[in-house]
Image (cartoon, rainbow, N blue to C red):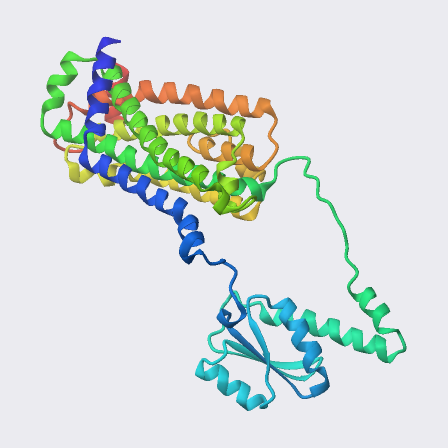
Amino acid sequence: MKQFITILKFELKNYLTNKVFVGITVFLAVAIAVVMFFPRFIGDSDGESDVPVADELPVMLVFCDDPSLGEPIRSAFAASFADYNVIISEDGEEALKSAVEKGEAECGFALNSLTSYTYYVGNLSMYDMNTSVADEVLVSIYRMSAMVESGVPAESAQEILSVGIEHQTESLGKDQMQNFFYTYIMIFALYIVILLYGQMVATGVATEKSSRAMEVLITSAKPVNMMFGKVIAACLAGLIQLVAVFGSALLCFNLNKSYWGEGGIMASIFDMPVDLFVYMLIFFVLGFFIYAFLYGAIGSTASKLEDINTSVMPITMLFVVGFVVVMTAMASGDVDSPLMVVCSYLPFTSPMAMFTRIAMSTVPFYQILISIIILVVSVIATGVISAKIYRVGVLLYGTKPKLGAILKAIRKA
């Protein structure tokens, strides 16, 4: 135990005194703080309201062959296109087209009738939904006119067309949209931390090996103590960095909560339930451990630093495949697919897959417990096996040892 604590303190001190580590942590904390204070700066600038006035809105021109429909169409379009300054053009379709080409208007509608029009726009964005909105507006006006011409009083026609439908949604499980954002952040943070710190563990082991310092260390400390000390130190360093970054984000958000508004995306990110936060920590730590042990073991088999990237590529690809599977399931909303259920029990993918299912679906507790038990056992087994590989690998120099030779040496260890 004394050896383990000594190694843990030494490795952790190396992380916390590393200028790059401290610099990145401070930079991320400051950058997120600036983002959290941004609405406050915008809201207080010149003491003006954030609501744009009509003159500041982009111009939308509307031309209609029937002058009598000009004002009804302008009113309907103005109500439906709140982000535009809707202006009725009386100069004809060519003048409207010319205004859009010159940039005097962002877009324009030339109405041949209530059922036919041409939409003019400079650069058509893939997110441009103006024609869909215009179709609904014109259909409403057309139906109104048809009902009035058929003898239905205008008030009755308006009441019929503007009837509102009331509905309520009661979720008996999880609200996927509400939980999507912090689930995404946790999965992405785990992805970055494992790749970054796993690579650092492997590089640190290979550096000690190439400098021959490992030959001295391995004779004075047990491989298990060295492996667990390095991995746990890396995990603590990663957690300290995440706490510093997300802690500053939470503090700055609470200071500016009123400026972000209620029920927004940012509010949902910081409104994580306590039980989900606990699960996040469990799967985050266990997921980091299992990959860090593998990175450390593989790093011990590399004779040169140049061989690290090639050596750890299979582990990295395994993790990336799991990440892609989880992200695809989140994007589709089908987080309980057969593939995701299987991945929830596989130790190399369960930290991401099971947490995603917990956050965005209803998972029986026994399934969560089974997944955690499998993951804990796998972490311990991986740690012990990695320590044996570490003991054998650090003393092998020259040609990269083959898998068969390593397994044979492990059985003798």
